[in-house]
Length: 551
Image 1: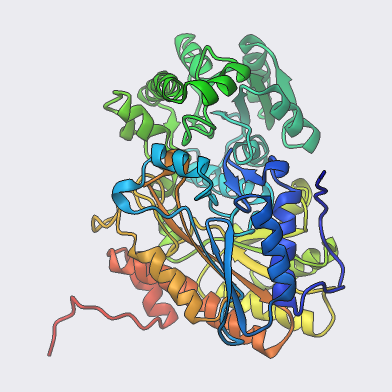
Image 2: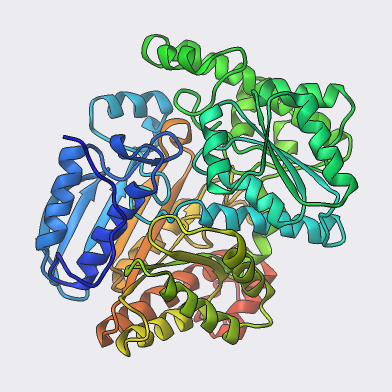
């Protein structure tokens, strides 16, 4: 049976309440905007909305029949039961891809995946929170903005950004770079991805040779004109060649799917067809080839760093694989969170999203207007909203992301709930966030690298975050761990809460969103970050300080 992937909308309920309907629409939405929806893949080669189609269909049936005092339990994309709870309990709780520590390796993941025992939910795929590219566009733009602030007098005009990868996440990079006023060159091995980004308006120009690409970048730099160029090629070949020519970009990173040596990264010297065959016939050989290619890739990135470029890891595990391949200096390249965003995370300022379940862009416009009135001096919020309105098309259900912190998220959500109640908005709105948020992730090679107190690998924090959100009546709560190359490297938590205009929703929003960010502030305060300790004092968060002198 051929599946259709339509964006839902309107005010007609198919479920027994808006909480259930909202989660059903979010599931439909991530497939409508997904990378390979026919195989339930939302992004990053393996990030699935459900384990298989029978599981997906069973989830849909369960959501349509759930009562307010029932909770659906989902294990790695497979629904396993509906239990009687109470009207304030989550509608859905799920755990995706969590393996016991000593068993959490890529090889075991692939075996269990092949046996249909597990699937990777990514961060926002398996819990139906993905909003298309806007989330990663905003995050990437925020990184570039912080680099501009720190290294280039807050101005990237005439600056050259080199990066790679135009998949589900990396495809945001050309637009984010152009929005930051830079000339950005993105290397991509798959011509279809380049064409997809051109059609979407994320990418302006395609180059088929390095000479052509560098000429376009050079012209844009000289004119101090923003430009995005996509080059068909393999980064492991292109980066060393640019370095050998003596061309030094101002900023260098990478967002290929290097986290997955089998289904994500394409090693140099291999065609897409060869890689597809090796996945089936020689997985070990493919992993080895990918790792050797990554060694060349990262060695070139270090060469750019040695020549003065700002070089950073964009969170795809490329340094880890390079180190395993023998690049001793791999971790001299800093990860973006530690290098540029940690002061924001210490105050629980991070990627917060809301989705118009009506499928009416006007609902998002009205919420944008409120934020611009309410936070005119918060330039992280106001600048982004203005830019997004101009340059970022909606994908699927209209949605917005903005970096809001403790108290700000709750204030916005309660105002939106009022707008729904009074009929200002056409339908309810779902609130969620990226897992890469202050209290929601432990990932020693991305989110929590080089924590001040050495707590990089302590996974208690996202687990506590999930439990706090369950206790605070969120509508969906998820605990995720890594799959493929990420296996054993991360634990994270996700949350979704629905503003349906009711008093009960106001209570859920107030408790969950407030406690969600409070747990993030407490996590960084516990690690000794001054920004978090200041936030505790300013916002009146009830922290227990066990280091205080006892009287």
